[in-house]
Structure formats: C-alpha cells, structure tokens
Length: 299
Image (tube, rainbow, N blue to C red; front, side, top):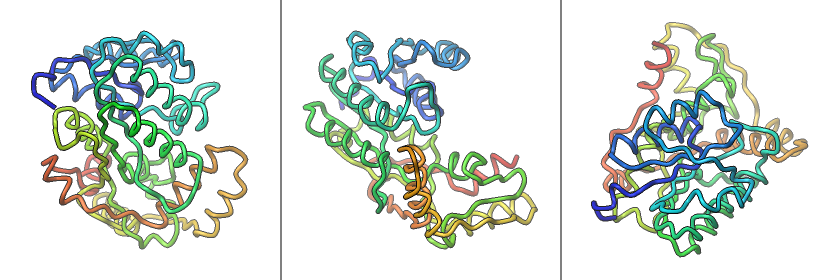
C-alpha cells in the first residue's frame, strides 16, 4: 500500500468489541479516517466511547444484508473482527454472524468498491467445528473476491483464555487446564493483533497474504500458571479437563456455539506453536509476553 492512502476511510466491523475498539484506537493514532459499524441495539456506552475517540459510527447489522448497502460507500479498506462468540444479541449465532453475516460484509465491500479487506480469523485447529468452518468459508470468499486482502490467523488470545471467562481465575488463584497442560501455545495479546491489523493496510508485503500470529513465547498452560504464581505469590488450585471429556462435550453439544467452544478448548489442549521469525521481518513489532500480561492484570 502506498503512503498516500493513509487518509482514506477504514471501516471496522465489530467496532464495539474488545479487539475492534482497540483497532479503532490504533487507526486514529495513525491518522486514519475511521468508520465503525454499530447496531441500533449496540451498547450505548461503547458507541459513545467510539464517537468520543473520533470514530464515525454507521448503523447496520451484518445479519441484515440490506442494512449494509450504503454504509461502505467511500470506504477504502475494511477490517472485520465481528463474531458471535463473546458478545451475543437475539438472533446471533455462528451461522448468522460468523458465517452468513461475515459473507454479507464481504459482498457489501465488493459492491462498494472497497480495495482492501483485512479479516481476523484464527489459526488451524486439527478438529472440525462450526466456528472454524465459518472462518474458512469467509477466508475463501475473500480470496476469490477480487479485493486485495490480508487474513490474520492469531492463536490463543491471552486476554480471553488467560482470564476468568474461560476458567483462568487469576484473582482467586484457580485455573481450568484443558488436557494435561503440557502442550505449548504461542499466546498472543489482542492489542498485538490490533497492531497487525492496522499495519496490514500500509504494508505491500501484506497484500494477498495470510499470516499466522502468535506471541513471543511458546508456553504450556502449566508454565503459564507458574508465572502467575510467581507474580501473585499465590499457589493455584488446578482443575484438569481431560481431552476425552472435551471430546464428549463437543459430541454432546446441542448448538453450534457450545460445539465450537468445545472445539476451541480441544485446540488449547493440543497446543499451538507459531514461529513468528518471518512475520516479524514484515511487521517489526515488540510482542507482548505472558509475563507482561500477568504483571498487568495482577497489578
């Protein structure tokens, strides 16, 4: 991308989410003009925070194709992070948001003449589940869309998977461990993923490229627990969830979201090491370590 594109408008889909909001913040820091897609039913506090930052909010819902028709006009690039996994409203599901909804976004971008599409997906997990199927379908549509693209495939977000929402309760020194806790994971910070997304807009090497993303260290969950024990001075109580139990949970799931969470947990149990040496030549960032994250959340 040429530097003279820096003032053209970027649309962020998923702008009220943790990752989307951080992307908006970093885009504005980089002097980009930013639009954020929000729903009429979005959290008013989050919408107000976007506006206060300087984001131009556009009302639309990825589930409603017609609501996207005009919002992408004049947009140079789209960064899409929208997902039903952490924030859901009535009618939201893997099928309606992560699959059909994201495909609606791609079509709206094509129709509006968007030049570049940045899609935040996740790295390959060696088990099938609806969320992964949806992500790959959207990736394939983007590749054949005619737009230039960057697909980001981060591994496990430390802010999510090393947080209380999925049983890593550092405040009370308790943690769920999926599998035996010995397989290594290249935990990544969502702030670093946001940095990659923004940098993809102005880097020629990011055009029509797919990047697997991980953090600076590959650590097993048990090694992560030791870091938190050192930082907190507390001994953690561990609850192990065997792979067999996760497989049974996935097979017994009654909806796509439950099945997908079981699949993601199975992915954690298997481990996920990402070699970042080549990617960091394209994007020379200092990545956030688990130790730095632990220091931050433990205060």
